[in-house]
Each structure stands twice: as structure tokens, then as C-alpha cells.
Image (cartoon, rainbow, N blue to C red; front, side, top):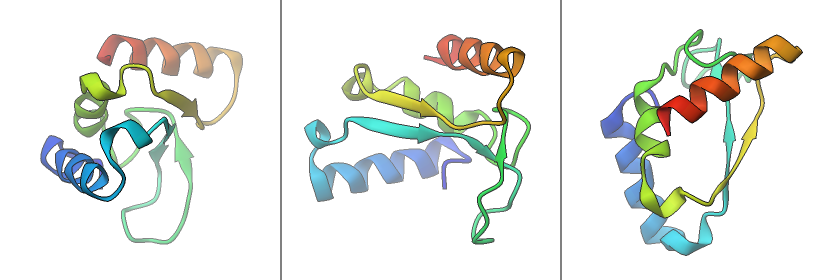
Length: 92
């Protein structure tokens, strides 16, 4: 669950315990049209789905992930890609 700062920080703490901070080299970044636990993966542009931006901003602000790769998997169009990338860069 990446919908809140608190849930994102819980994920980060668990990932650090399980793998170590240095082992996390990248993230699959997409918002979701499907609710958490639905078992569906329906990509949405950031800010248009159920995840929202609070958790994403928390993740992107973590210094240990400053060099991590972000794989943007959102609905594709040149304009949507530009908007999603601008939003991510603005949050980082």
C-alpha cells in the first residue's frame, strides 16, 4: 500500500530489513484504477487512480533511492508520458 506516507514508510522499513537499502535499485511506478487487494493491475496516470500522490512523494523524497531506476508504467501517449514525468520530477 503506497497510498499514504505512513504505509510507504512501512514498506521502506520492511524492504530495508529484508534486503538492505543498497539492494533496492528500481521501482515500477504506476497509479492504479483498481483498489488495493483487487488482484487487478489497471494502470492509471499518476494522481488519477486510487494510490494518489502522498505515498509516491514520500518514496521519491528518500535519499537512499535518489539513484534508483523508475520504470513508468502508465497509459501511453506522448502527452501523458510528458505529464507523468513532469509530475514525478516535481515530487522528487
